[in-house]
Image (cartoon, rainbow, N blue to C red; front, side):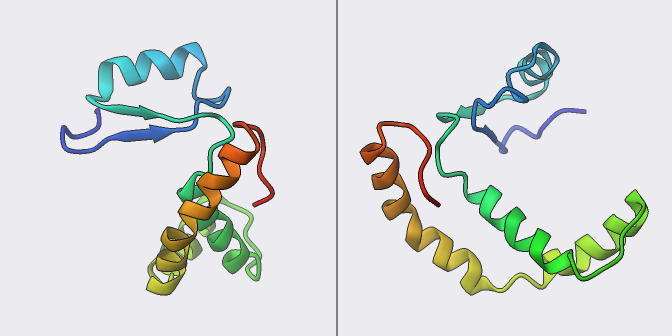
Amino acid sequence: MGILLHYKLYHDNGPKHNAHICRLWALYKCPQVIRTPAQSPDPIEYIWDHLKNRIRKFKISTINELKEKLMPEWDKIEGNVCANLVKSMPKRLNEVIKCKGGPIHY
């Protein structure tokens, strides 16, 4: 199964995304791929970090337990978390420019 035509695959050109098998899969399964520099501020990484902090309180030892805890916590992410992230993106992008594409402090 591939990604629907109206979706875009977004990735940061990190090594895990540039593995041969991943590039082949994307070639055949993804109609549109958005590539960004490996050190770019990736909004979803910040959301995953937020989510990871929320589920740390649980003792999780299996994939099924992870799914059971992850999905409700994902649904509880407040809109202001995403809104604040969106508002911070210009500042983060300016930091990338200042660091000439290298790692930023966020």
